[in-house]
Image (cartoon, rainbow, N blue to C red; front, side, top):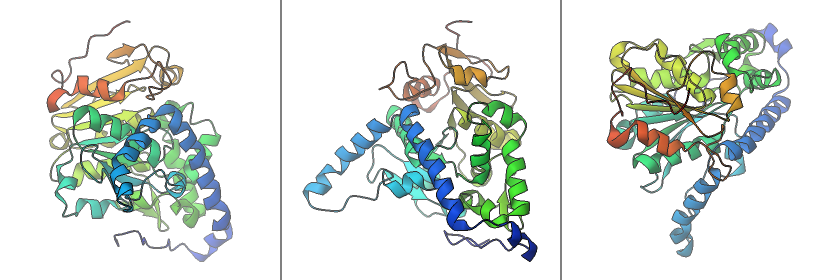
Length: 348
């Protein structure tokens, strides 16, 4: 498979052209849904702190009349349906490195791509803005670089959201609805199915149907994380998922061999998941006032109930302190307790 941003155009049988809607109609619609979810990112993630601190760090360059690095707060970035990998380091300039191809990331000669030990996935349809804000929060708390996996956003996401998947993502995850919808679109309209899927299509083990990428582990983000866990020489030590991002982590690690997840720590915020993966330490936080997270528990109990709701934005209290909870679970780069031992519950 070619690597880079110039992915091959799906080569569908000619009769499938009859089902392809004009791309000039589809992509703006997907961008509009992505932009709507970006607005939700501002509610659920600490976007104001991210924007303010990046502005402060860029201020000296502006004084010297130098052009600061291209930032994720630009309109094109926050409405872009394509996923990406954002290497966030709150302590080292230029603070944000963007990768749009998994194979290129894996083959990168830069040591920071091999050294990063922490990865995060945000919730339903989150943009680069929300993904970066969560990773930034954790990077500050732990003093380490963090790899944020930005979910791609395609027609399967639009359809799922229209069906209520934003509020019932636990049910849809159990039914693998996104995979079914993505497969159906790929069968009927491969070009449409490819919109928003370039990142997952760039994984070394990508699966395609009529040239369009389809999911192997339930979603594009799960496929990307699974590929990174499988192919990186240095394993991740910590994965953090908020909302549906926790479910995507669960899907990604479920089919890996024990040696690839040995001593791995998983922290979930606002969505407890199954803990049936051997060798993994789970630390799961759920808010007492988090109706959305409680709706999607599906029998999985958190290790700790917190007096919070679903947001991690401190400007909208009572918010989950993503950085602090992660630091509590993973102090000084080590899990707080041995695998299988839960954090004491504050209530039952």
